Picture 1 (cartoon, helix red, strand yellow):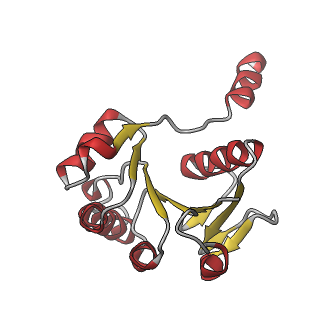
Picture 2 (cartoon, rainbow, N blue to C red):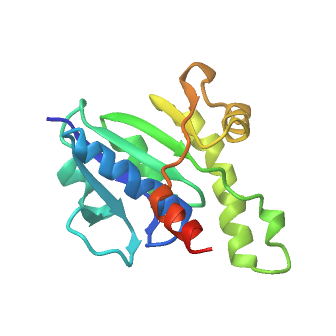
Length: 170
């Protein structure tokens, strides 16, 4: 059975990338895949969330898959993507332009600036598939060198049922 490692630097209960990671995880499990989530930091506690240090114990075959959710700088993942002999997929959530944070949060500005540079680095490494949240994100990634024939738009998973319940309250 194929192992699928879903990777993101941080996982929480409330942000959009975490919602997408969790939604993807649920669907893959429902389809019968052996999926796990790999992170550096998490405040989510369920057994399938593992530290990124454990990924070498999980990816064992060239038929396995690594899915990296790209949204901000994560230096560590670049070496992992280069090293792993498996199928590789990038889920691009669009890294915020750093100028949004200039003068407000310099650490966030730097993280976004480097994250945007990593788009080009990942394009140069080459992966099997580039999944993007929007056409804008896709064309931005293609502009950085992503292979157009391997680039597609896949909307993020959302908690529509929770949003519907909230709407009913108002």
